[in-house]
Image (cartoon, rainbow, N blue to C red; front, top):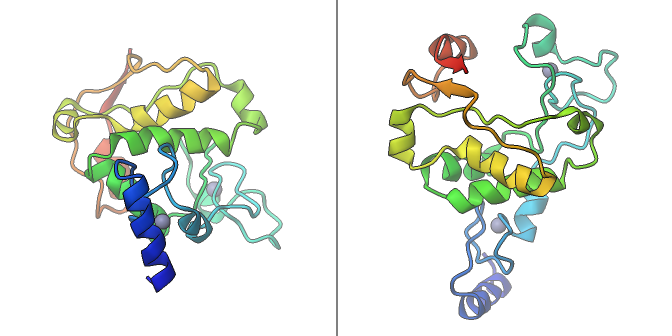
Length: 196
Ligand SMILES: [Zn+2]
Ligand SMILES: [Zn+2]
């Protein structure tokens, strides 16, 4: 951090002592609903390039196929995916804080950021209801919230869509997905969900 940044951060701390910190670099944020500072906005790897039609991953602009290698070789259980950023060291910090740091407000605000950056996409007009990935009871008690629900809540509040937690349930407590391969992740979750 250079001298100018230290001065700015000190002024922010005096003027906005209760404001949240940037979820990437920990600078004090001026606006309460922001989740990262302007510097980290530039660092995050926003996906502006061509995307895979199915999973939404960034794709090489010179390729011919509209579908990425992963989706070509593996059958997905979803018809459309979309992400704002590539999963790199900066976006990882935001996700870690939400999953393991107890940052509930950050999860809701991330849902708002998701809305603000996707509201004009056509495929969203086909959505009738939003169902967040459910959390099992043990994990819910440990974490105190379901992060998928909070992200969806931030999104639905802005988009005015019904949010339903009572349709898909997770009745089996599964192992943490961290450190598992894609195949192991699928096996770990097999049979864990039920639809009411
Ligand atoms: Zn920052
Ligand atoms: Zn794909």
